Length: 375
Ligand code: ADP
Image 1 (tube, rainbow, N blue to C red):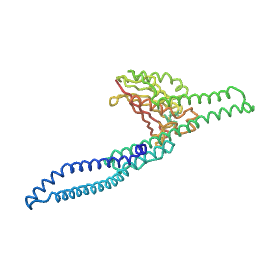
Image 2 (cartoon, protein in one colour):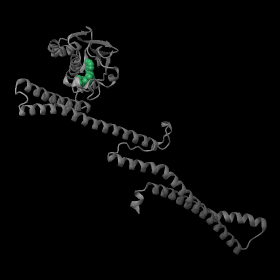
Image 3 (tube, helix red, strand yellow):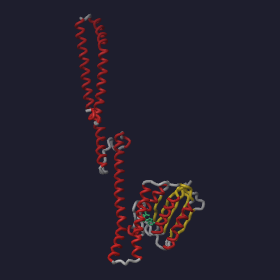
Image 4 (cartoon, helix red, strand yellow):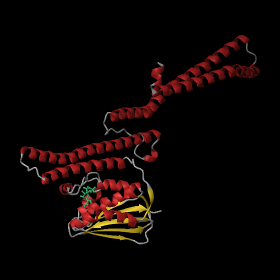
């Protein structure tokens, strides 16, 4: 019984009302018991003076009847209070216990993977009017929506990774079959192709590792003041040969009086390499890439602009999403896994900056802009 009581909020509510009533009635009864005899005697004495004496026997009878009337009134009042408690506890239980039970059932269903589960919010839609229970239900629904989104992302991620792995693996298998059957010549060109696919797999795995690290925020930033011209210079040194080989011009324009930025040099170096590498990849020979840095509203703004293939407006909002590629086949041939920009955005945001993509349209070049904090 105690266990049953412990596990039912509605019963507890009802019992708490009952205890209040019992205490109330007890207090009333005791007070009446103590006050009634003296009050009765006082009133009888006053009455006797007016109408003459009353026999002792009659007075006792009178007193007994009066006491019974008081007791009867208390019993009636007590019963009415009991019924009121019963009705009230049913009403309050409905308002409190039902939503709690609903949330409990919903949380169980969510735990078994039904992330679409939501509960009704008691108290209506207006946030201002919600009591604690309504706010709890609202938070519960927000939590469920978040879980649903994370689950969708997880599913997407697995699908994407499987898809990304499938293409190079299928190629490697195809080359090997060709070699085994003697359809492909066992020469350097064939081995180069196999090597290229294996290299792509390796890059993909490395990018995925990096992505999971930055998404989990599991990296420390070693922030120090660095000059922007040094950051640009390092990236230019790394990529100059590739630009030359492809016949794409590379121009830098860093304002001379720029203050040092306070960043993790390696991480931001990675962002420069990624943006400049993309610019090179998506700019045909004869085009050019320009890296510029300016002071803008207490931050350094870096722009990597190219005269390349550009990005259609409808794709612009998505280029920072995981595995997003504007032209799936072209980008994949170029070795892109579609997560470079996702990592770049995480790194820039970790430094408190923002990164944006812009383009005047297909064939009219793209410009990526990001901000870095100064001392
Ligand atoms: P990827 O490794 O495929 O280049 P990113 O995350 O770096 O992946 O870029 C995502 C997509 O954004 C690319 O596949 C490409 O379609 C587009 N993109 C990125 N940079 C440029 C650019 N400079 N010019 C045109 N398109 C670009």
